[in-house]
Length: 198
Image (cartoon, rainbow, N blue to C red; front, side, top):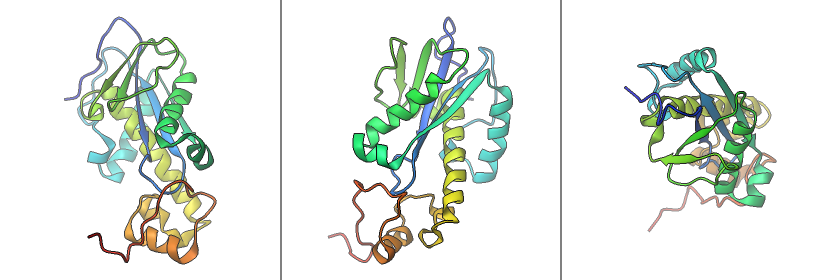
């Protein structure tokens, strides 16, 4: 079972993002604070769960969290500051809206831009180790997926309802056929799916 917290003296928030590797759509991030004694045997990294399970756990997280917030950084912002900085900015925006405020931050991955003077620790594969990071992963992922299904209605030929903006063969083929949409990240390189890598 995943750990409840890294430490217990300070109010601790877990952070994660979704959509870093996508060609289209914003990058989403979430921050979650659970009670110190919180337990949940079903919580895990969003990528290890199917869509139905993620949606079910999302409702449980929203109900059980002391507080949470979900934020995003738009494609035009990503193109200006790059995807790494955009991911950190999305997490900062999520942290900014927490009430109560976090006094300690757990971040999935190995890098983070400090948020003010609040101490943080980066945990590689943290979404498989800590409940708050796993919860943030699920909230970010389900929120982003819902957004991509919504804008799919506007541009159905990119098949975002299925690929969620990731660089699948069909998504890349559609970009070569129809060009980019306003939701695409202009600084992301799109390789021709018809070309074989040598």
